[in-house]
Amino acid sequence: MVVDCLECIYDRLHGSNADYTQNLTREAVRNLITPIIQAALSAELPDEPFVAEDLSLADTDDDQAMASSLIRMLNDDGWLETFADRAGLVIAFRFTRAGKLFAEALWAVDKPQSRARQRNMRSCRNALSATLINVDAYDLIDAYDYAAKVISDLSDSVTYFQDMVRRLMLEASTNPWEDFLAFLDHFDKRLKIQFSADSVMLHRTAIRETLHSLRHMEQAKFDVIEQKLHDVAEFAVAEKGAGTAFDWMLDRIEDSIDSACATKQPELIRVMNSYMGRAASIVHQAMVLKGSATRHAYSATISHVATLTEEKQTAFLERLGQHIAVTNVKLLDPASFKLRETSQRRKALTVTAVPVSTYEGRLNAALERAQAGAFSLSESEVKDAIVANLRLLNGSFRLSSLPMNTAIEVLHSMQAVESVRNAQTTNVKATKLDTKLITPFYQGNDYLIEFTK
Image (cartoon, rainbow, N blue to C red; front, side):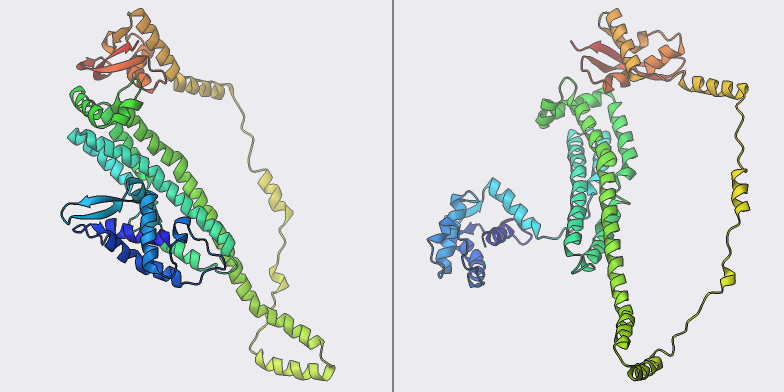
């Protein structure tokens, strides 16, 4: 009863039909919850009904007294609070902050979801693109929020299928069809979009490309966003550590998208396959049982014939034969069955010949492996080279000052900035400069790499 009253009050204050022109007075609250109390009091109760301590003193035959006690209890327990309505010169009621959050959860449980899931994936992609175009920190914060909700959306779908599996096992013997038809309707309206137009795999590449463009944006635009984040995103400033809030938010967005693709999306597919397998098995079993119900008539007929005398058996079988005279019995021709000859198996064993390994073949394979790994550098090697150059050049250097006499030195220069940003340690940082780095091998922005301490 109390839950129904809370849902009714929430719908009046914050629902789709809320009237914001008039505040909720005590009389209005009493008029809202009185029908619910009357329905609860008139319902059939158990032998020893549980009554809240605050309501036990109220007269259960007087719905008005019960409504007054319930309003007082909700106000004392922190669900509702009073405030002065200066326009109407009355005392009005509203939800407390905590009461509104819990009442909204109770109200939303019974409400059907009108939107398709996984809309946050496209919103995250659009917000990142808007950040790149408008250079606005608020768009980046929106993208961060959408990326965090992507995991929540997938988790909701996983929980939905887990509940469906549990309900399927409990209600399989009574109603195996209605839940499966409800799933097909849910899949057609929501999950089909989630696995196609709103798939995390579909937007992952575009989001990564936008994140790469944001990480390499101009220094002036970077400074504008970073300064704004310090003003409006205190949580990012507190969590960023030694780096920048801008880079921290980009890293968190990328981690959320990668987690959705690597963990939650496969988990959703696995639990959906589990439900589909069990549902198909139960539906197949129900169809077999329904079909076998007609075949039981033959066993019952044989058992009945065995209990009859010879004369009654003949009369019964003659009557039965008139009903099943349309049945035709066909036998397979034994000549149509042919055994497989053993010579066919022996031919299959001699088709493939073992290849002969020659010296030239082994040499070519070794050369291909050497060429493939000649310019492959690990991140630890690049990081060690950066630290060595920093110690040699008094703690800081520019990329343009590095030697590029060998291919390894060129690769160290090309991968230096990425290695610094991907490193787990925070004692080295890379700052983009206004000057350009032009070499015979590649062109790009020049960076200043230095120790932070």
